[in-house]
Image: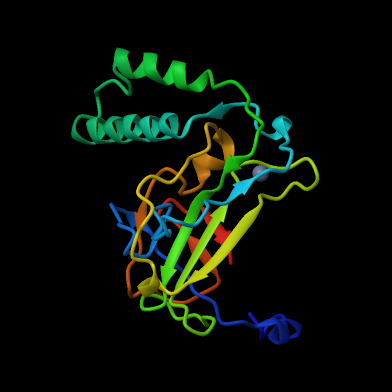
Length: 210
Ligand SMILES: [Zn+2]
């Protein structure tokens, strides 16, 4: 790249490319969209900024998103086994129509969603002193003041978290557009041997610049 665009050489940075795979990561694993090692006595972060409903014409509950993904996975498996089978069963079709109708808008402070947590043992990055865990959360909506999603980053020493929050709060609704592209509500595991680059990339090709 720098041969073609030598002026970019000064901007070079070492980054980490992740390869999340569908899985059931625990709080003790690095993950994308998985549960976080969160201290039980620490308040969960909320977003209290006004949200832009115009960029989220259809909103879903997190359970809607999970159910939608399970139905799509079941359909894909059914078609893999029998390409002549119907894409949706009548029950699936009915459920998808209900989900796609969306949920009522809700604009009060909402809990942030986990995006990723990375243990230093799994990915080479510079940590603050005594930290070995990076946690990233975001708000699933655009905001009235700025279009970008609001993110929050936390560094921790995992050894100090002995009493873990069992049931983190979830937003009552999420943006169906951004959430369908994101790992939220769909935990993915990370290999300890992730190669390095500059983009977080999922199996389906969705990516987030680091
Ligand atoms: Zn927000």
